[in-house]
Length: 403
Image (tube, rainbow, N blue to C red):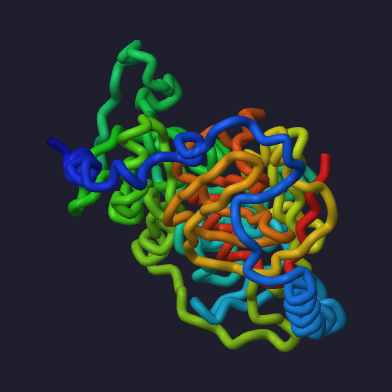
């Protein structure tokens, strides 16, 4: 039995201990209510207290936003500095906006070099990627491309090839390898071939981890990132759940840079280069109730997308302009309204936006973006999407819910 499935089997043994709390709200609910919009949670603050918290947070954030907007930058293009690695990221070649809008730290890590010229092309190395500037495509989505660092790092290795198994598993004739399961879902949800390239190996065990190599990346499976409570739900209901770091893109950008003896030593921050944080930009979340889709923005640049499931009829999620007024790492969902009662423990990554309406991670279904509205008013998200937003957003981040 592979390491990956030994972990899953062990988690399954714990299922019998948690059956009582592993039932979604539908198992606790009775007749459909006639009540208007309500929500899953009891508000943590009164409307006045919530408004005061939002106003205080936004007032505290405003000077940072104004300073970032007014400070002259050297060079005169948007440039930020990452103290984590001691390097800059700018829009001189479009790298900063590409990084912000295509995965940020999660997929690319931090910059580990400045912009350099390699084989006649401007490039920049990151912990998990290499950005390449293509001036021939200036102003198009292909101006910035990702280097084939997976191929370059493994050019001395032979992963073999595989004939099409014709079993329904996704097969890539371009590289003669397959992609399925958790890795396949991550590949599809996080950018596909444009970000990761095609698979150049099958799944296999390497250094105690299940891994798979791609033209531009290497995936690692970290089953321990999903708590046994959620794992048991995943197995019991036969659904796929995702936690943010269950699949990790490994640091092959750093490995390749070191192998090529590229200088990754930190450099001093340029005068006028702001210290990077998500708070450098005005953050905003938009939720479309018609398409059941969420988009997160930084100063108008879309930086994250996620499917959602919102309130069903009788518990409709309210439309309007709101703001995050409270954040809770975990909370128990319980209530009784309109003839229905519910109790669901360990709901992760909760962010209240109006009254008892919250964005939160969801483990009792995975019907996000399907058009099926399933909640008592809250905005249900896959757990990985909920965690990303929870880490990125702050008290005071504005939230527009609209049709």
